[in-house]
Length: 390
Image (tube, rainbow, N blue to C red):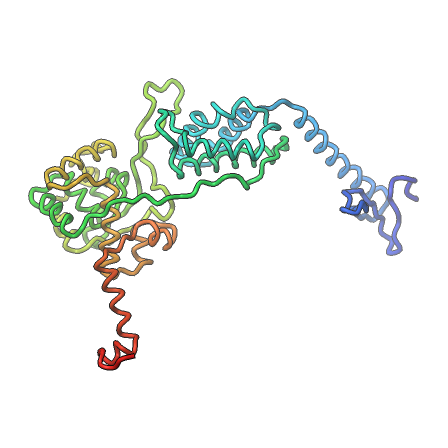
């Protein structure tokens, strides 16, 4: 049996049948073909018809969607729906918050086909300079970067669903600025510790653990005595407390407390506290289900913990330091003591060493001077103790 004229099916010299299907054209207009092979004319024709049918279905779907007046808001809503079961509850609540408060009000009613890279650029720049909902300036670069990420994920979803989408990922990215977070000096740390160790209540015990373990506020709020292994001298960080938007249908409050695993896989970690700290804490050890910060089976949420912490700073006659400054202080003292950076990175729960070096390490001027003085040992002048002029 021979192939019919126009089918582009032929029998090869090696005995196989070949069907050629037009795929596209080169830049010079030359046609590009895809070949299918079979043992018989009927077999290769069936393969050809099946492939052409699939191509036509995809083409028709694309044409149908390109003619639809789908809005960007519909796309973002669809994207949120499919992400709900694939991310942590706190992450999903963060997505919903940014989409509903920032993206939908300004971009939601635009047709997807009308959303361009220029529109996204302008939107992000405006958010950076005047995006706060209270009208008091712009959003932080971190928040704008999060919004940008969500926008691009939503647009990528639209492309996968073959909706008309012309935006690429080369849109405005806000320049990140590391906040100038305070670190307690050695003298300030001594003043704080005098108050903490003098008459330690549960809150003081938690702050001591933070100061010598580098915990985040959500992690210390979730810490229970069962997380301490006094025989091995380690404490396990495996949960955190965070307040998130309550997305439950008919929720009586806008937010709720969530006790969840730490923010990243690396944050789920084991910290070997100093022996003198473990010996001190052991005297106040309580039941396994008791929370360290409260001395009861009831947790203390981060907002309330911060309020109580500020009262301790006043008692120690110290200026206002964020709770996160204790984590920075811990990292700084470790560096000043010659800590191995890789070990410190793992103790802090960072994904890589660069995060530790760039974000949390603030060497003191004394340490910098000490490091600079070491250069004398490698110079001719230093080796000759300054007796030889060069």
